[in-house]
Image 1 (tube, one colour):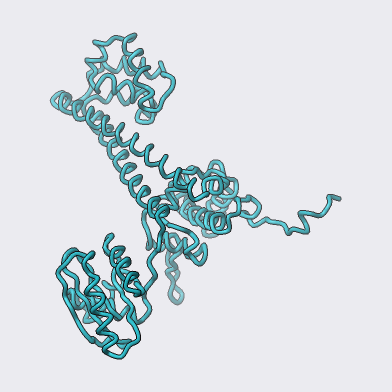
Image 2 (cartoon, rainbow, N blue to C red):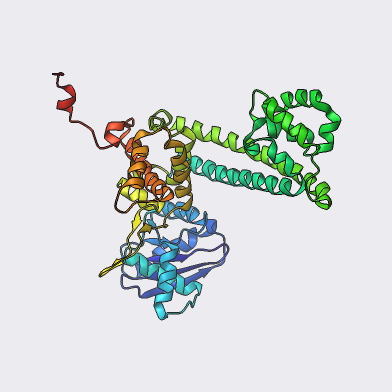
Length: 417
């Protein structure tokens, strides 16, 4: 076992036998792309020790392990990965301290690998890898969009709170956004423009925000709010100027998010999955793409249960003897996959009768009744299972199968009485 403690410019190797006895060590100061010679050294040392071959093991550090995987494949060596959490636990189990060094970590990686506490890393092709990168880009833009919205709200609550009363959900209103953009978040500018000129300018600005028709009720309310003096006087000038920057950030993040979502759907089209995943009622192509960007090719999972565990949505029991604690989800795996599944459930529940029925059952049963949030988590796991079956079997979603009410083929083909 050739274990590698992977870093930026210092790489530590430990060659061990099946009993984790050190056969050779080597420290190389170079970037991951220059490790081909060190990997060949490990092969030679293993052959000299009487072994037929060697397996390379490392922690999946950033994107560096992908470089090592390519070099290992070129050398004809299998690469396996060890979870960093297991290495941290093993480090503490050594002597109940947190003593850490690169040489010790390399030995721990080798020991865990020989004990088969490893997994084979994903071998994604160019299309699936592109979907992963686009998914990461979308998460970044969604986060920035949410931050810009919250910042805009906070600033206006301090500097011009009346503007937020112009619409029930002002930050979701296209007319409100367009009007604030035209006014540059300045109530004095609204008065200078006047009601008629403001309406014409908003009509021209609206398409930039994705709107089509001006809501004059909101426009009238915003025009009246321009005369409202509420707010902290000393903070108004600087706060409104900063709000203008936040509004521009919001528009940029929204356009960038829409752009990357379009590209993600195009990748789904290349994989011939768009028409398939959208057969699941309430699941949009973008929602499915966000999930698949985090999972990768679903055929690499042995079962739907493995996919749910990968997301950290599987139940974690807490019981001992007569004690029965609260059961929660494991929370392990990919947190962004949990987020993507959670968001998809909010769009799916109003339109998917199978998932809605499960949610209603979990929140209304007499024993072990779940809260709304807990039930949505459980439904997210169900959605992942259904998506796994649809994608891996290339079978359109069917409500009867998903609800467990599927009839046999003989019953379906039997003539009606």
